[in-house]
Image 1 (spheres, one colour):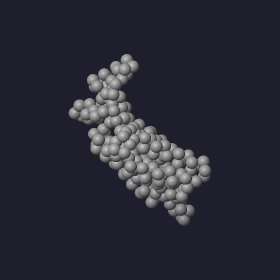
Image 2: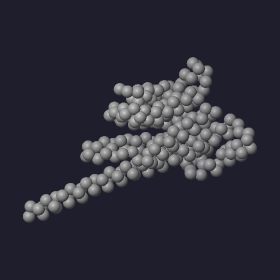
Image 3: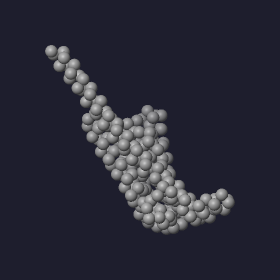
Image 4: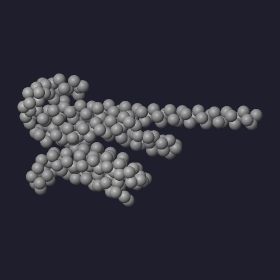
Length: 240
């Protein structure tokens, strides 16, 4: 155990607290503040530990197998808990959360299978984009919930659309922002707009990164098979 690992464990410990704060009147009863405001503070603090633990581990030469195990688990638990609560609060669509979390299960399983075959699949750059998109989506949607009742799903549209920024509520909110007189509803709609946009980005990045993982695994298997066949052919020729 070292300081980076303690930070990672702290991130895991605060996850149940985040869920309790969002789903119960704990913040209002004990601190007299909005549960969304306290949840945003907890989530940002936990996200900060995700940045700090890796930097400290590398700077102090304290990279450990325990840290390599706990860090991705802590990240997945934090994001999963926040997204599931957002669905419960009607701030995020269930289908998007299912896609994001389903990708995590699939990629984790793929990396485990690859590891048994001696193939190490490194984290892809698109995975970092996915992580940042998820964090932006969670914070923005929490802001949307903190400033009033959440907007109806898809702003009243029947199906999710890429053109959700063209609906009347968004156009009105932006016109107020440009007139330098935004009100609570404008912040709510703006936060919801940014959150839903970031959630779309997270969904696309999740699918893209999953494709990259499978592509790498398949190509690496083909390369190893070709190398093995080449060695076998050479050994046959030498024996002749």
